[in-house]
Image (cartoon, rainbow, N blue to C red; front, side, top):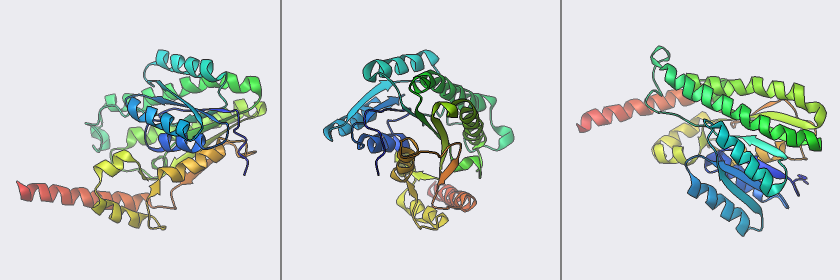
Length: 278
């Protein structure tokens, strides 16, 4: 299948880890593509992705960007445009998690600071990136935008109110992009991964839990970053000729409620073990 990415520049925000990094590497394998990734904290990992793409004969570039700092967004887009001349594909993947102290709290106990950090910074930062990239796409009458949401936008879990609200806000953003950009050959879609085996989950959840979590997936395996990246590459390429405004899950048809229950049971067992050990 010809993805038509030869000579195209792909910008992946948050491309240093997880789904973003897997997507950068996947785009980097497409002949003639030029991959730009942004990083916030993980400069080393971002540069590792660049080095990997270049070792395989591709072209890549990494630059710093913070969704909370719109001046840094402008500098990042300017640097990429200066390096490659244009931006043809945008993957809005970056997220700044903010402080973790309030996560998993009951809804009424969640601080407004957590809401502001999760929804405000990330949503407005994503909008800013998109506003800066769209003129390149309009000028060339072609573009692809892939917004990375989450299955949590449909089926939530305790403590994820701000995160789920942010990810659902991307539905409305994408709908507006479809209305405003489609006539200029720019297609916009949403990808919704399930709980995915990214670095932080591998580090924070032992194999014992991962085996249990796989029971929430009819495929009996947890979604991988590469599973998600494959869809992102397709939607962000010329092979996608007319998929527009869709919300596409990459979940293996997993059950978030069952995963929530398994996670709750796991945390309860952890708490019991901690009490016993003390």
